[in-house]
Image (cartoon, rainbow, N blue to C red):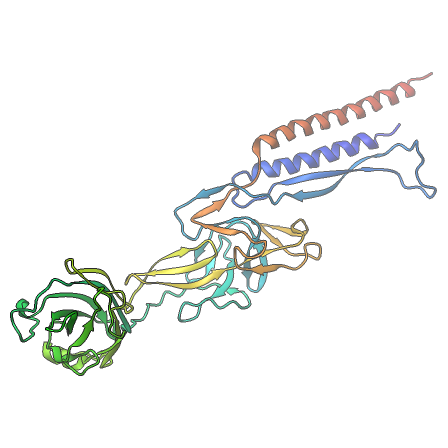
Length: 421
């Protein structure tokens, strides 16, 4: 009599229950991938081989294979909780040792590095000083908390409609303080090299020539002579239109502001670079028979800004939001994929490491190649199907009981033989 088959079946069923129990235990583990037990039959080896009537000697656990199917996504309030929707793994660094994970529950450590709960640092591409992502060898991502330095205004754009029905002002000599000396005006803030805001005001004056206007400018309400619109300090720029109301003047205008004189006129001290040079572009401005209107008015300067928050795009770009209303790219997360993910070696803590069986890591930006996109402020749930696991547990329990019954039957037969007289 042989108890080998029943014993191997008990061992296999016990290991199968272990796998199922591990899956159930990790039902709520973010990024966990369920495993499945695979079994193989066992035959006794023989020099002459096994015949057609050979009886196996049981079963064995052939492999425990993880299922890298997509888990459900759950939204959170942490912008650095990031879920992968598709293929790929986050790449982590622990003092230079590289591991991979699907668990995207990240935060910033005291040094500004993006880390997981174990302190492993997330890797990716860093951005240069201008916010351009530099795709090179993946580095540990560190978010700089330094202020965004001021950017002086370099270009002003305006899209207006000037009322073609306007008559010449009743006061012949222009003065920004006299509304009867101009037809319409508008203003916006510009910034010097120190980030100080200044109010730049434009004034439009109808001339005697058809479809022609003079444009004056002031800064902070000081004298017109502090601003040069290309024709000399204080001189107006000529803005002309054709009979269809389309702008015909060459654009953009080269303008400059004497900030030192502005400060003197206001009784202030300003150490910013002077003059402040910028361009003024009115392309798209029209002269039609309707009220003066401002359709668009913008400039490219800004004051100093402090980091107020982070945002992550679906392609992994981490951008900083600043108190001056600006945003800038700081880094980009990378993902890694493998030809054979089943060959990865599990390390625990939701991490794997590559092996010869998995093949080398294929690294790239999210959304490229076979790599999935990212869902910020979300985590990937465990892909364990709890209902299926409970059914599998019942099936494995029945297998365990059946194998125990074969041992019991073998024992009964052996006892019968022993009792023969």
